[in-house]
Image 1: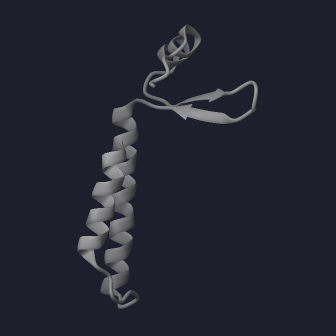
Image 2 (image 1 turned 90 degrees about the vertical axis):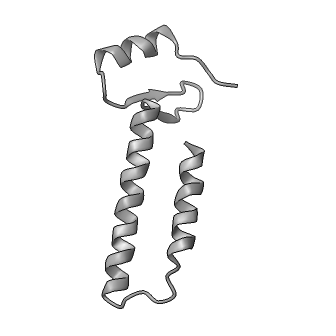
Length: 83
């Protein structure tokens, strides 16, 4: 099931294009953030690149041993498939 946007959400997204929209469940008071799927994928890609660079820098500095690049890339692909 894919929930649909309400007209109120659609209007809020139009008023602040390109920025995340915070919404709140009035029953649970839980906050959520709505972003365009393309924006979310880009954010995940940027974070994966950042984390990979940190790992590479640590490996180059001799701070990490037994780092398996194939394992890291497989995890990145698995996470990306979720998007």
